[in-house]
Image 1 (spheres, one colour):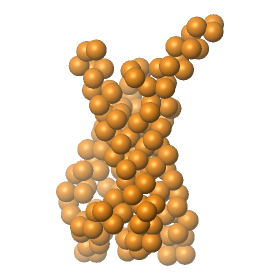
Image 2: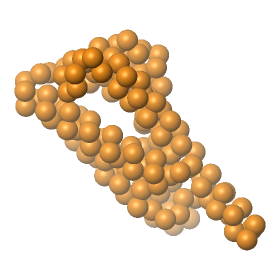
Image 3: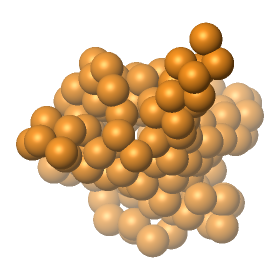
Length: 153
């Protein structure tokens, strides 16, 4: 494998792993996550709970699919969009002076938001976009399915 192929595998595993871990950690500390999510004051409190469920489901499911390399491009794109949304929500709260707990990894991550969270999310956004733009994914279910499709034709 060349350097680009290595980076494709590493970026897919890294981004997918981060989001799968984040999603599943929120499942175990869901009440704390909902509290942290509500404190961001981005959406009306009446719809925080459904959005919290949706967010956990998106992080966990697309994190897993990207990690195993299934629907890699769309998974990476969804995770990139989530990263951009997280960066924006953090920025809005820092500008407001509303310093809340990140809630990024459920109760595991109990630190207050800072500009470092924005930088981290923008890096994850860039990794997600770069990964989504790749054409081939080595060591992935996408590669196995593509190979089987070529055999059947």
